[in-house]
Length: 392
Image (cartoon, rainbow, N blue to C red; front, side):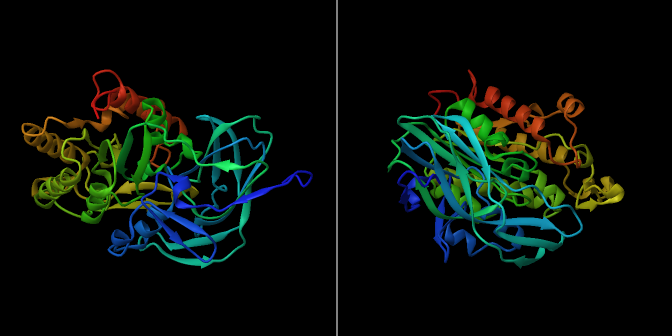
């Protein structure tokens, strides 16, 4: 911070945050959560416990004349033993809705995943750091600081060289989305470049992203969290984690989807609700899970390990799930005109795969995220789409 000017420290409070469902006071500051405490108490595995605390789509919002802003945070970074450490997470600063600056925070805690199957890990504690933004435009402006989408981030202190005011209500519709690691933002290179963030910007809506890496499993506590969260538009991207986790058969999948949608409708009976089937993923189109990591060649890739012949016995593949979801939505939409279906291959299909192949056979690269965001923006928020202006 420029010591030649007075600085102002503003406590980070929940009313300055957007895109979260709960906050936790920690020994260091404030930790945003994307699932409420009641749901967190029911989480059965460490992967979801980590994923929901990673603040994909969560941002700090305020109004100020400041040209220099510092945000002290304690990040918790995740690395996999035997693989290179990922780059430090990026903080995106938007001025009046436009990306104006980026920063990173070095140091912090490091959680090393020692077993990819069980997600067992070891935690090494480290120091807090500072995301610093300088040379911002003069004059009053609305600021958004989007937190790193795959780093747990405890917010400690906000410092500026001008007073901070509460941001005015945007007046935008709230879009509540649930999905898997691709919705979470896996392989996106910064937080406003995840496909849901890109689609939300195109649609002019406020995003609440409940994309959880490896954890879109039709969990009832996630459905209840969505039921109870304020929202104008809802979407659920269902299928890939159910298949690659090999967690159920078709007999269980169909009523589980009905139950999830029933719960959403308890809290949002008439809001536009979009069911999205899986994106194209060649390794699981017709081969059941479970999915397994493959380190041949020194690069992490994934492969399906199930037997395609067992589809007749109810084993799930992406094509089986697409057929089931289309049937479920067709059945329910007869009594629910605000329920809609979108085939995920319209977001990322054969032509997209040819242009932007999946580096690890499952997750898109940054260019793939842009394509998915563009397609969702056009199909959902564009003219005639279920989320078009006036639909919610």
